[in-house]
Image 1 (cartoon, helix red, strand yellow):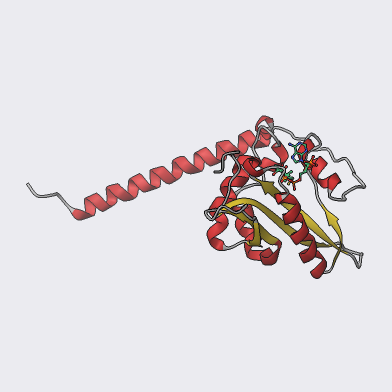
Image 2 (cartoon, rainbow, N blue to C red):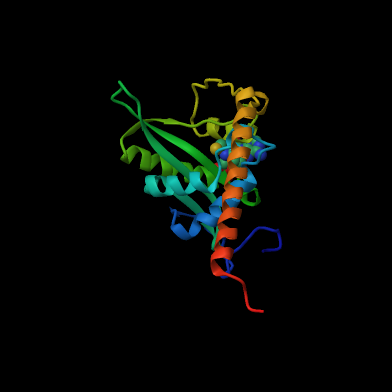
Length: 203
Ligand SMILES: CC(C)(COP(=O)(O)OP(=O)(O)OC[C@H]1O[C@@H](n2cnc3c(N)ncnc32)[C@H](O)[C@@H]1OP(=O)(O)O)[C@@H](O)C(=O)NCCC(=O)NCCS
């Protein structure tokens, strides 16, 4: 750290954020940063889908649409996207699914750099429109997207229903419990049979 609290590189020069393709070894760090950013308290709808499976699947299927921002050997941001081909339309859409920047380096243009690289890649992949979405009260992201040229906003509402109150949910849980109990009984019986087959122990 320099005297003004900003990070400087070992040779004293201003550190440069490098935007590069995500590598397999980055997955844990990217996942942890996402866990910090996409929390349940902040965005319930997003939280539900940020998990290791989502990240690993996108990494495996979308390769060049998964990028990271690196600063002094630390991952400080990431962007993950996909291409959508809409049925009945000749147009391809680029969908920026996840964009995250470590708040420690917030408002220093890291997301803008990630967005710039993603835009180039989406264009190379044939996209004509870029889609992003976020919670309506995510002021920082909305300000960021608007600043970076996004418009045509279309509100979308998430609704949820607690399925644990549904009679089918209760019946399903009951069936599961009965199945588990039957499996435990069978396992106990197998252990007893094995014991009997082995005969009396020494002494
Ligand atoms: C939104 C986010 C990606 C912005 O990253 P960033 O690196 O700080 O953004 P940049 O430095 O490139 O751009 C800065 C601009 O973004 C907006 N912005 C960023 N943080 C902001 C904040 N806390 N409050 C208001 N606007 C903010 C502003 O327009 C800002 O421009 P300004 O500083 O001139 O006002 C980052 O805050 C983040 O990761 N948020 C949590 C995850 C998220 O919401 N992702 C988007 C939906 S998937």
